[in-house]
Image 1 (cartoon, helix red, strand yellow):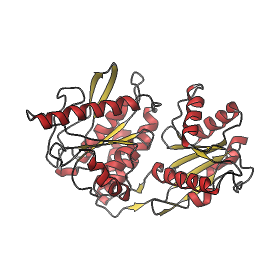
Image 2 (spheres, helix red, strand yellow):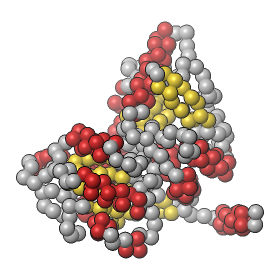
Image 3 (tube, helix red, strand yellow):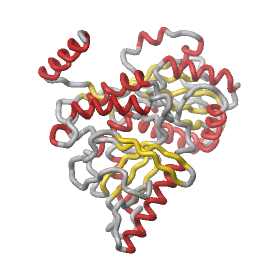
Image 4 (cartoon, one colour):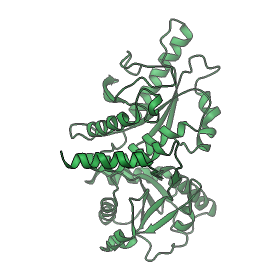
Length: 387
């Protein structure tokens, strides 16, 4: 539909119809785009994509998008039918946004099937946005559309409007920094999380407590600097109703790498905090060290600029820093007011930061395997060693 012609099979059935990932090259408004169509990974044995085959498809997909001649990922479009919001939608949301894309790219919700929706199609979002947030699904943008070809003038008009909205959304996100990841790093980070999320759908799952690493270059000790630094203990105490553990990595910038011993598993979120007016070169060097030391390539990163009063200023500063220096670092910039600023402004900054932390933190489950699954995985590892 975005291309102006049918390029992939679609279905109104509950099971999917896309057997594997497919890449379609589309050109519009002078912009060349690679559109990847992927299979839903939660269909299990009742869908058209068995779980084992889906995992093999996922590996092949990750190898394709991380190839050197590819341009990385600029946007994830999560397409759902315009019906009642169900908790089941959270499954693929976590699989694709958290486990596969590592929450490193902008996320757009595309609501389809609205050709006969009463009133404006975008009113679906107005009515259901709170329900999506209640289930833990947050989006950077959205589009309410129809993909149906029809001779009916009203539906055809909606189709043309939908095509224009989707193209506008894609074009806007093409201007952001592209996320690129190493093949081995992405596969080793994604596959365990995908397996755990898929098994958590029907087994006795246990959601893991989030682990957050914080590097605050302006804090001389492990306490907050009143009026200039967020209370990290408060804003990272609970994430998505789960007790959270945070580790301060401030000493990392002074060459102390012993913190690696404290971390038993990859972190779920990295937070880097620096004073906006500080020398940009040492700041960037510290950020690169923090990013590379703790898996920033496949872990979400929030950069907090201390001493700014609004998000626009933080975004502008981040663009200046990232575009003028080497290093493929994708981050979510935000602000925190300096000293002697109004309490109301500080309160809004605290709330915005807490919401950003909750939305960007990865979701992980402990993988629970049956005896048969453990045997099958053991057998597979033995066979691979003798190839």
